[in-house]
Image 1 (spheres, helix red, strand yellow):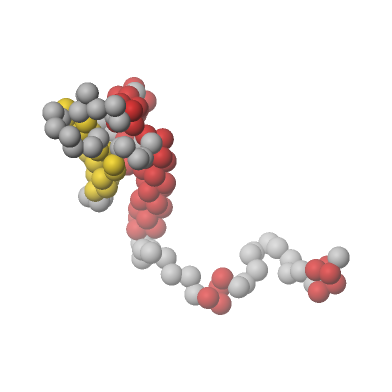
Image 2 (cartoon, rainbow, N blue to C red):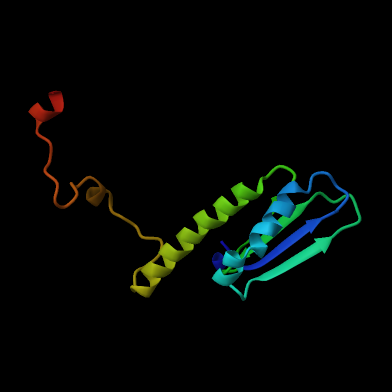
Length: 128
């Protein structure tokens, strides 16, 4: 999960009962496997003393920053979103490394073509 991030900032008041997502996400970030995936990722924890709601801010390796309200977002859903966006970053990088433009634009006529190695279905087969 951390391999897609350059920075994680977790803010919460320890006396606030809504800190569960922050604590769980912090534990996930501190896991050995997560740290080994990106030792350069900065992990910042800010313990607040005010009424500010628990918040998790992540910065992706491409510089995009996302802020999550940890009172309404679970640690698992934040993790899933990071992994999903990370896969997109990897795909984008793969295309750029191959010299392709991003995003890839597929012409409509190509979308309607049968996939290589498949036979087009006949009208009789469709009825059965």
